[in-house]
Figure (tube, rainbow, N blue to C red):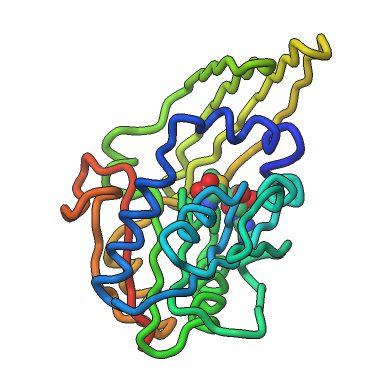
Length: 249
Ligand SMILES: C[S@@+](CC[C@H](N)C(=O)[O-])C[C@H]1O[C@@H](n2cnc3c(N)ncnc32)[C@H](O)[C@@H]1O
């Protein structure tokens, strides 16, 4: 299982530099190009809820779905009225309503390593959208992953009381279009003078535009845009992260 207790505890500090407000504004603008009246969003893989809160600040009603109970617990604390969260797996989650848009952000679709996982994720998205509704999601982009292959990295972050070290050891599995990443996480809590360690393995899929188009069309979507993440350019072999917008037909 990924995103367990220790990883969740480290998550917001690990990504404290990530500009969730700018990302939500970018995604909102791309959604509005296709559906200018969109007001409600289903966020699949909502994590600690930071995009959801930013979407609410932009005027949306947001419902997040998250598989990790530890991540979910962080998202529910202090969320504004227009935001709700549920514990669930995006591959089979069903709410009793539809939304104007479904988003899945910060590589959540890359956490769907098999074709069956992807089909089920797209089925969930389609089930929650009327015709004309928008799906927007980002993912690891195959041409760039294969050109600039993932390598072993260490990341260290110092918070007020926590000190985090995360070592990631990736293994490229080109037969499966995935990268297996073995993480070793060390959390030092200076307040309690404790050090905890956890190991997690994340299986990340990278995608190519033609296969994304094939998945989308077969699942009842019309691709509307393929972009390099946070730009309005087409992704290329330097774009590790791509972003697709599609409309339900
Ligand atoms: C990199 S985090 C992104 C979280 C959040 N969207 C963000 O932008 O911070 C990936 C998230 O996807 C969640 N996730 C992965 N597979 C999932 C699934 N099948 N159903 C629901 N959530 C899933 C993980 O638990 C994790 O919280």
